[in-house]
Image: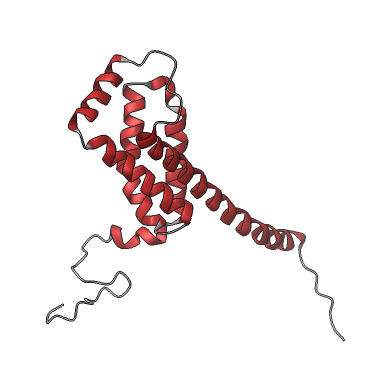
Length: 170
């Protein structure tokens, strides 16, 4: 005679929660990637096409001096805006996402520092972009493991630790 098996309701609830949470988390990562991609693509293109309205209030003196110095270099603004546009495209197309996150990190650090020290009234969007960057970096953390190898060797594979170049001693 078979004994009836009882399943504790907490076990069933945990299974259902995990089954629901995984797709929701996946969609949140996609939403974060698209939001960050749109932000950098739009603001990057704006650097070339100047289609967004300019701030109506007065710009702080330090912010004006910093922006003027970047513009006087002749290359810095196009470089930054080009990186922003490229990163936006990579994030929107879901291609080379880890590379896009690495490329935009120093730009984002500078954006946050600029707003923290020179224009603190407008720091909300940079903080949102930083939160998106950190959440995406966490979601793609496996892609960053090889970058965090303490003693990496030239031509070594992150998984095996052996050289892949085929040279003697490699």
